[in-house]
Image (cartoon, rainbow, N blue to C red):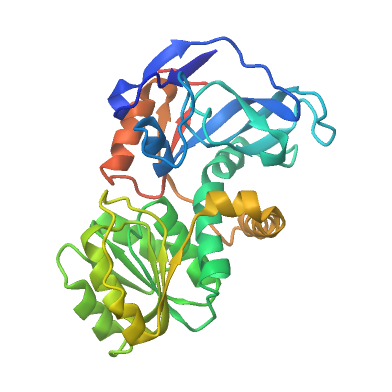
Length: 331
């Protein structure tokens, strides 16, 4: 099989397309022929050696996929060869075949279309993160106001859509017109161009000085402090990620003055520690997808050989919605 391989820490350009032996599933694992691999920010961090864990070299990046089971390891009773699935892993998805723990597999309907199989393989991480953030961490209530930073990206656009489904008033902040248009299409009530407008003043005008109830921040960087200052009384500031690259230093007296809370969101650890609640969340998300209450956006597809270009586009914050890799298309 062919796979994108990382054999030293570095930028996406250091990745290589190689012929590799087909992996074999161990106990309680399955082997999946990969239909689509989603491109996510942790993939870029992993190959740079900047994520919470470091796989042994050589490895293939990619933690989210959909495809079809082609082999089953010892002790797997609830899955069978031929089942179409969504899979989550720490790495391994940027390849034509990937081994996944059976506990991290979600079976899909046998008659699922190729288009829906593609969607299923690209939305679990972003929508799972955003649902966990708003439902479990912020405990969002209908009628509250949500400010989403980086609203045109994968998790940001998911937060816009889920926030609207939960009955929130959604203010979407994004850097380009195309991203702001995507946010409006997915339910945002208002948009802010935070490269041209004063974020804090614009939020103040939109909320009549009250501030927002929830900030969803996957960006970090220079906009973190003005966004925190835009939180109203008893507001919640969700720390989701640092796509801007810089981890902001927050003056914590701001939390005291507003009676507000700074809340961490680490979906991967939530999945490991609270599997039952995560399963409930996944059931809700897949029902929303089936009913077309959510409409994940895939803005660009890449053959396997161009996976480094996909990661470069993600790091440059050019992506609108999700980027995906199609491993069965090599180049």
